Image 1 (tube, one colour):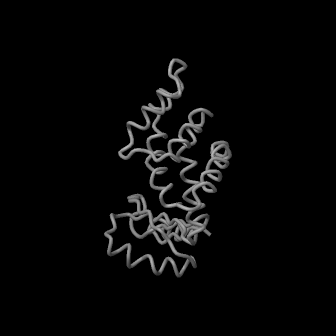
Image 2 (tube, rainbow, N blue to C red; image 1 turned 135 degrees about the horizontal axis):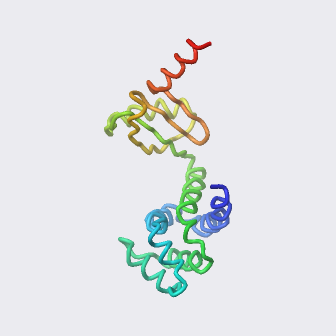
Image 3 (cartoon, rainbow, N blue to C red; image 1 turned 90 degrees about the vertical axis):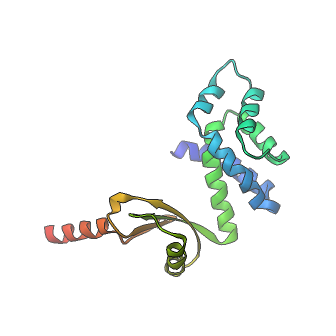
Amino acid sequence: MAELATIARPYAEALFDSARGNLAGAQAWLTPLASVGGDARLLAFAANPKVDSGQVFSLIAGLLKDPLPAQGANFLCTVISNGRLAALPEIARQFAEKTSAVQGVNEALIQSAFPMGEAQIAALLPALEKRFGCKLRADVQVAPDLIGGVRVTVGDEVLDTSVKARLAQMQAALAA
């Protein structure tokens, strides 16, 4: 959703600039905050005109496993007071992208037809890093529709070695 990305960008950039000395620390509180902030029931509660921003803040802070540091509390207050609670997951995504870019690490979405163990991921990552030319942080998801193999997405590049993709290629070749 382009509009949400546009709304989230200034918040992600401002947080990135203010947390430049401790990006990992900011990411540690932003990720759980985004997962709580993206809940539809919470957004409905926050949209209720009878609920004030202090109640929304208290509810969110109470749902988090760890207490928010001062920077996190200030950030959450700003997001709530500006009515941008729905943008929290996108803010966290953009912040993570900026952090990864500074660290020289890109996010890789690895979709596999079957669950992959740590050893399989560790064996696959060096080949993927060589192929994409950068350090990668893997997010592995199971996608049974692939039938077999993997589909790797890094930024806007996709490496699809799945059986589903190969069958589609064969179908296109036979139809031509």
